[in-house]
Image (cartoon, rainbow, N blue to C red):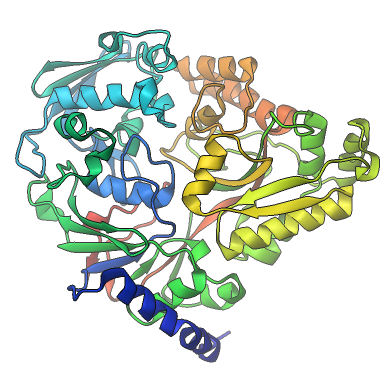
Length: 532
């Protein structure tokens, strides 16, 4: 089937004035076009590596700040970053990292003490970092973050000298080097943060440790990055200027791309769903598999969702195959578990499937036969045609199969994240992208004290299984323990409803753009992308 240009042209005409107005209103000045212009989705909530949680902001944060390791754009595996080498002890609990002679963009040397400061800051309770759990593998990391331990010097990270960092773990952690590439563990400028506090990102010049400097951040216009000449690998940075445009409208995003005002559309939700069948046949549409899931969270602190029978009833009456076929339409796989198949060294257990009859039985057992007396509840989602269509579809499924009423509640990205974090919702649309290629990145967010949990669900047995599993050095024994933990999550307790596993959809003309490679983490460092 050939692409229908008339349909696309009508969209271009419909939105051309809107796109021009956006660009003119955003700048009001003549600027050079960036070498690469990326349509990045929602306006970032922050660019602080310790605070960011969403993919749009993480993409920018990793361009500004680097950690001890970084992800290879070809494989998604961790490779040397600010640390040029490391070794680990025979018991696999102590790592010694040797920093390369790297510098901040403002010229000062990046020191081991700043690595220690950055990690302690991530764990500090006052930072309220949702990714603090990534450092629970350090000795006393969890204790310090929970407030049980007050002395940061007792955390298992210290500077042996200006360029040597030693890390002590609670137990062997197979994915620790991958963790070091996480945005949350990036090195940030201590002096600037201590001087400016929460407003440190507004300081100019802003010291950065990554490939790019922050030239401008204009809300609802663009984030402009300029090459950092002090970056240790600056010779390999391909572009002088990169713009990230915070566009959430799929129609507008497509118009900007088709008119040449943008070079890359990163995300599927920036593609009009009604044109997906046609657009995926274009040569500039690139599809690939990666480790990500679209799912729903239940707030288990709110009645009647505190009853597992209610949560199971809702899950059993969600026709995931219909959603994938009718709405997603890009070859996504239905998810009956939370951890994607194909992740390293792990085969996930199956959770609940589609069984409306069993769902109705469970709802009746919970005291709501046919939905009688079931209170109206809300489904929270952030802007995007795809999210809206899924919300409507679930609303109709639950009305038809269970006789219950659902109100739809849309919130702008930053407010949406805040509502999730404060548990100000009943049911919420969610997604998760792997931070590294190990099942733990999908499972540890459900531990009782993990900031990314955002469901209110706490299960001591789950926590213990995961801790025991991650202490195992024998792969088969570890897999069995993690499978038992995931079974609690997706079959027994059900604080979430998995819907589908992502299919990567990226638009760019590979005759014009080079340096974008497909890997299971959907990691595409902008410093290796270049215009041909």
